[in-house]
Amino acid sequence: MAGKLERKHLDKPDETRAFKDGKGKLDVVTVGSHTVGRGVFEPGWRWSLHVKPIAGTPSCQNEHTGYVLEGKMVVKMDDGAEVEYRAGDAFHMPPGHDAWIVGDKRCVLIDFTGVAKYAKPA
Image (tube, rainbow, N blue to C red; front, side, top):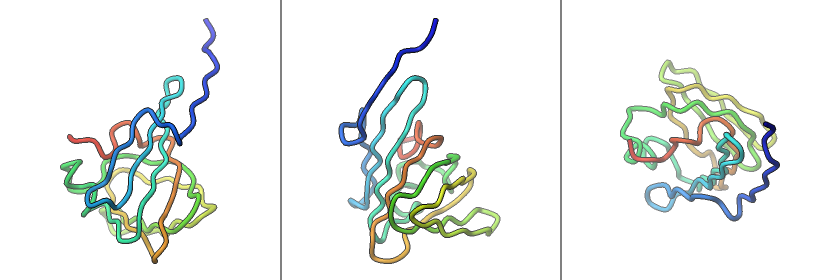
């Protein structure tokens, strides 16, 4: 049996997960068997400060694959490798990292693989 066509808008998400201290949010939709998120990360956001208390893990253990719409984010792996992602970049972030916003503009990205458990209590 074939699947059905689906359409959902991220401005009307199935769920919104707020980050600690009002530093952003993740809007989540599920289409078919896939969970997609739009992350909005405000200036000053850092995973280890604003999501770690929610996740309860020493570093982010989600794998992220997606596209940066606006802003800049640095991701530093537990092994020390570091990349700055900017608007227009497609990205892959393996599990085991911290991340933070660069500059005074928010970062907005779409994540296709790391959303199902992201920013949810462990």
